[in-house]
Picture 1 (cartoon, rainbow, N blue to C red):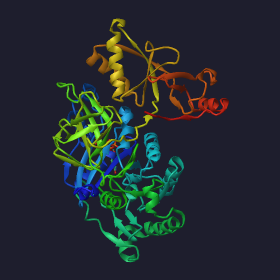
Picture 2 (picture 1 turned 180 degrees about the vertical axis):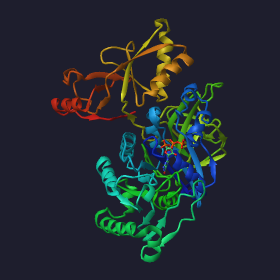
Picture 3 (picture 1 turned 90 degrees about the vertical axis):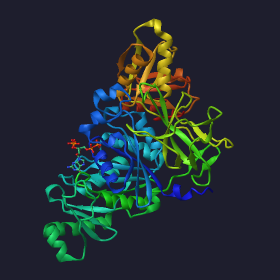
Picture 4 (picture 1 turned 90 degrees about the horizontal axis):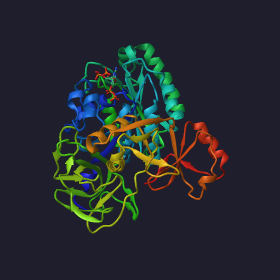
Length: 530
Ligand code: G4P
């Protein structure tokens, strides 16, 4: 065991997920209030300034005022060193959003109290479930009129299939929001909206049995309702169980208002008690322990063109074990090469800081001369193991790509293949032909624009995209299925990936069901294997 056990054990690495506008950015900003932020990513700046503040990695980002890339930030709180991985949203939703979750040990799910579970949360949630990582729910915007609390919890349970355990309970909402009742301490923490931008701490805490004080703060009506609800809650909700939380089977639920900075520190304190230290990770030789093992990491994201002048690629890796020290020699397992990581840096949108050391749980970005692929393993030169690959996530938008100038065939194939290797898009071929017909699949439609833009600017190739009506792709799990004899619905399309593995495209869920029904033994998967 290295002498860095303490450093590793105080690390907590989580991803923050939500549907756009639920308040992820605002909540992240408030987290930073509580700990001196060591490093700030551009994406946590307010939306109004975002247009100017975010990176200039790609023109497209500037034009649209969005950040195509996810970012990471680190802050200290109460002796912990916390890494937050931001997941990009909106139409810039891409496979990177999913992959970010592969690098986190837990997820914080932000839900808008007046909207409940929304589409994007649902998608990201599936990946958390697949990885069985703990999920913490923060129900935000309680200062606005909210849906009924029991209904919100019911919706999470039904829609996402996870049991809920409220850690605190809201008293009213909107203009009538009075605060939260904390179940563990049986006390009410009163709401005040005057603490925007400051650390909370002025909030008053009243034990539930101090009736008179409580009445004077929240009034009789709210108090009666609270008493009834607590009774119902204690009888009906799942019991607090840390093992189930850590297994991702039970989500602790918190209520608050990120904008007015209410409930944020309460969340942080409980969260840090429940979440885990960096988790061991599966490799082909078995589990790699973060503390017992020396340095190892895996690449979960590759970002091209972060700096236009240098046309560089940065590989982002999650350190899984041990300590990284500057100019240390490491082995790139897939390339079977011992190397020094070049310019390792803490990744920031518009700030980069060269690192001298980093520990399991941390994310670093290194200059990539084109040797890394998503899922690659790095370890000490004397070690030899590979981390489990990162699954390929199902694209939901497809288009046929045509190059306008057929003379530029070579550049076209090179460009599109490289961009696919970086993981920004997935490329497929018609089932019975070769590279002459390329079908591109993306998780978010913005990736189509990114592809077009990059092919033009980096490879000097103009393309036309013709949208295809498919929305669902399925990998065939049982390889013995005879594809020529497979019968599907008339709108089903057979394609293959670059390895020649067959896949199916569908227009709707119904066709998937019909196809499975018609072909005995056919097993389809939403996640591909690398
Ligand atoms: P996102 O990152 O999840 O997309 O959401 P973001 O934090 O940007 O919040 C979206 C909008 O919701 C913002 O308003 C933000 O101020 C507001 N908001 C966030 N948390 C709360 C909350 O607890 N209560 C209330 N009432 N509003 C909240 P905006 O007007 O769209 O943006 P801005 O111009 O204020 O930045």
